[in-house]
Amino acid sequence: MKKQSMTKSNSTKPAAVQKESENEKNFTGNITASSKKGKGFLRSLFAAGEEKRTIHDIFIELIKDTYNAEEQIIDALPEMAEAADNEELQDAFYNHLEETERQVKRLDKIFNRLQIDKNDMETCEAMEGLIEEGQDIIANFKEGPVRDSALIIGAQKIEHYEIAAYGSLRTLAEVMGLYQIADLLDTTLEEEEMTDIMLTEIAEDINDDALYYAERSEDEEEEDEGDEEDEEQDRQYESSTRY
Ligand SMILES: [Fe+2]
Ligand SMILES: [Fe+2]
Image 1 (cartoon, rainbow, N blue to C red):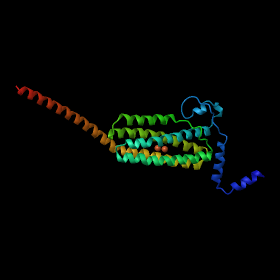
Image 2 (cartoon, rainbow, N blue to C red):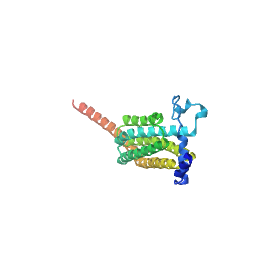
Image 3 (cartoon, rainbow, N blue to C red):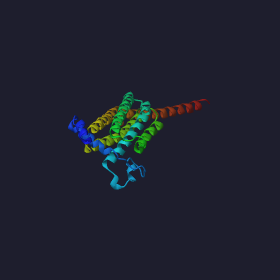
Image 4 (spheres, rainbow, N blue to C red):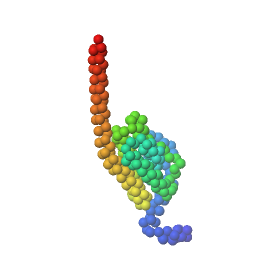
């Protein structure tokens, strides 16, 4: 009787959606091992027996890793934008910050739908390393086109990490028959890819500026050295004519 009434209420949904909600049920009770060993986004699974690991577990661990990575990016982007000398690059970082905040909301939707627990989220060590690289660039380069050029490299490494993560998540979602979730992930994937393309375009101008800046700096150094030599010769001449 209970089964019949469930079938009746579900029958108003389109067939694809009905099947998808069935597929989402595969996540219920899909709890990963709590003891951790090793490194990387799948470390929660290493302690679990091989036979207990499923593709659903991998999806859960990867989406948690990606969520944490996005949170780290939200913290890092204002500093990267502040450090950028080029206005276009600065705008790109600020715009991507807003986009990233929307991406986290999209992930929240997926977490809610699949009832994934956000409380036991681990730090994404890979993103931590990439962000540290960016911070080192900021700390060790003075403001200007050369630092901007290095910042773009750091930012593109981050985008490529995200592209790999969202591409894999979307593919796994499709395989598991979670098509609406795959669409959400695909929207973010496209944003990350567009950001990467945009950074490549901005880099073309900045790299030219950085090259010009470096050549000019060398010329200026040579000029300074030349000036110092002239001044020294003047001093020697003056002292020789004083007697
Ligand atoms: Fe992102
Ligand atoms: Fe991104």
